[in-house]
Image 1 (cartoon, rainbow, N blue to C red):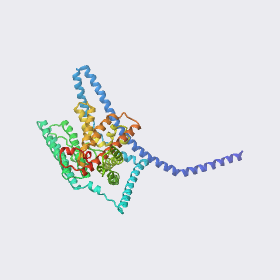
Image 2 (image 1 turned 120 degrees about the horizontal axis):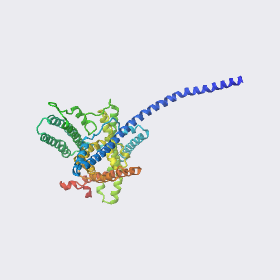
Image 3 (image 1 turned 90 degrees about the horizontal axis):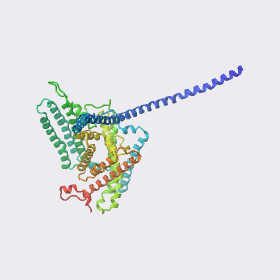
Image 4 (image 1 turned 135 degrees about the vertical axis):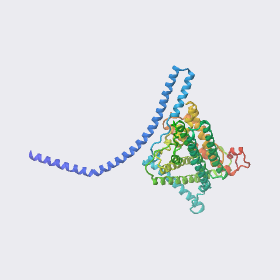
Length: 534
């Protein structure tokens, strides 16, 4: 029995020894697992912070609608018990105005751009690599065609040099507009705000200062950029710089004045106390930070990542070359001689669907180059922390959601100063009319930009945006859910981009092949592609 006990003891000791050795060998692996779990925990925390910000916004909007409904019902029931029906309607309209005027505007939070978060996932980053590989294919194919045709390797970027021609004129025009916007709106607001509470006729004084500012705005930010583009016949890219900056300065100056006037008017000053005016440093920062909604302060990042800034500018340059190769390889060979061929429905339909691919490429490039790279580069240089310049518009199942999430920067401005102000004027009613006003305004501005930059009037964008987009916005609303509606949204988007690319390219070459003999109003608004046949 003693021998058996001793043997069993030895067996237990021998069994424990390999187990302890295996635990020692597994300790590095456990450390690696701990490091990986810590890294995953950090990524998960960032993701949850982003979800928290979006959830707070959604809850705030839903809670605001719910409170509005409760207040409206309570006011209506109270007025029915205590006042006549006519007075009830007036009370309800007044309460709606008060709610709209007191509703908090856009809240700026510290958050990253969505693509920056998605690019940390290897599967999503592979899609980015695929687009880079396609650019390499465009470059190789262009070199191969040049070598076959000319017997040498040539990469001529004559189209880019033409598009950015007269660049110095565009820069000079930008400096003039920037200097004006930097000085006149700020000084005018300070002059008005400093004297508003001390003058006797406040309404007349406000009208006088407002009329002078409006006249200056019309001359410097209205007429002057149009004169530069038309008189100097700026090429498309240089024209885009001038016109888009014209619109940006107008929207920025309007937001600055619109946000500060109610504060000054509602300020309750003591005897001899001066009104609190915005600081010039805040206004200067606002002019260059990537938002169109003025605030005295924004969330800021602690430091600048210059490598991130350089990467974004490099990606913008890559998108320019990408667009160049798309036009050279997919558009110019198709549309150059189209006006010389007899018109047929078959040719038109085939050309339209042929333009769908380059049109979609141009849409994605514009989104990535401007809404992601350009805005993030300036946000990083200015340490602007709220990087939600767009949302996940590619997951939209309705055009209503697509229009809200495609360009959040412009949407915030339209929502704050067109949609909400219209509702405030109308006493909180006519929400459909307010939405229609936003659509028409946006469509007119888009068509205005294309008309001046391309040099001809062809309202394709207006028809697709205001008419088709408006119908789709009300028909394909937020109640449409599911993958089928997302596929339908993308299908309509592809076809719309093909229509725009096809018709605008046709009109461009029709203007070249069949120039207008007599310049007049009807000649300007009549598309040349309808009658140009060589």
